Length: 302
Image 1 (tube, one colour):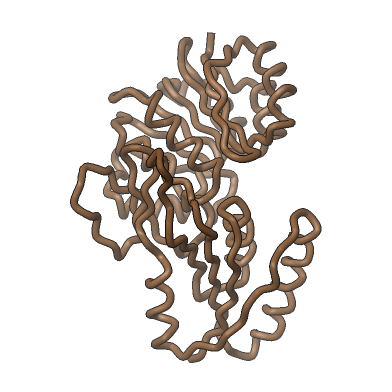
Image 2 (cartoon, one colour; image 1 turned 180 degrees about the horizontal axis):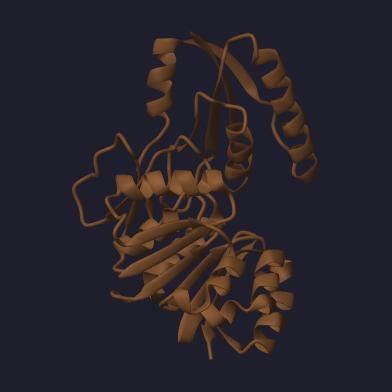
């Protein structure tokens, strides 16, 4: 079989948005790569453009798939300017080589290492987070994910209980377990994301620590006393509007008094209204973390 490679070279923030779109159409997989991931403070920020590559099978469905893909790219381009995609045909063997060639270990923060499943961890003391890049979301390239991971390093204490709302690939849950969480409850409203997260949890041999379920905050609240214990630390890398709604709905009820909430997915202009809602519900701002236009709020449940 031949494969059609669709590729872009963009900054890290845009890379995951494009990759998420491409993943809807590319049964041959989506790869993200950057030649340089680390900067001078070793926090794992991309300092060179990120390559995004997707692979579509060349079959009777190719024309229709390519048309739908280009329509999706057009709509995404109305939000933020996109470069033109590059296309090239690959035979089967070249596709297999290209698929693995473009995935490399990514260092994030001081202690974490994001690894594709076929990679071996380099010698060192970094904690491996093994992800199968068959789905692109939650790969660690987006600022909102990195902000969560670096905050997690600073605020998680060994033995604490963690809730990860909107878990996606499971990257934050796996990192929490690697950093010493005793129990992680990972939730997502997307059944496909839950399947991906469960596979990644299994690959990391963390199924006894991480429980992945379909659902949202409403399902957690509905479980009531059956959901025990409350979290010492809560992670949510979701849209700011959803975060604000969850705080108003009762997010603090699933976090222990004195517990920490790490909320990401927030643009600079969305911080003020979100903090106003947080204040009404007795959440104290501990720290605001910044990368490009993105913010992560570290809050304490009073």
